[in-house]
Length: 131
Image (cartoon, rainbow, N blue to C red):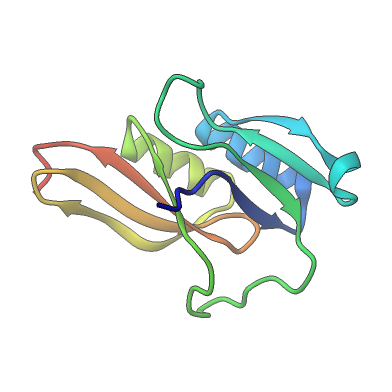
């Protein structure tokens, strides 16, 4: 069975993207640019003992997605403890709402956003009382 081991988020402005993901989700970074030959920062998304994967922010090698363009890549959904405060941080740091918060009844709150680099991300707060 093939399991997702790593993700890459393509970015135009590396410092802006590092700030966005660092401040919204608390990610830490390791510089792997020498190995990759382009600006490439490993994203540490949590402790090794918790479910999830690490990934990277890499320098975009082409044009950014156009607003309104259909998704043409994988969308990462990130688990959060407090949906509303996470959304506020996303918007404060320049993100935009794509699909507003909605209930997955009896399971969670979910929604989708565009990050500062034009990529779509999801956020997900488990909540058995979601309706």
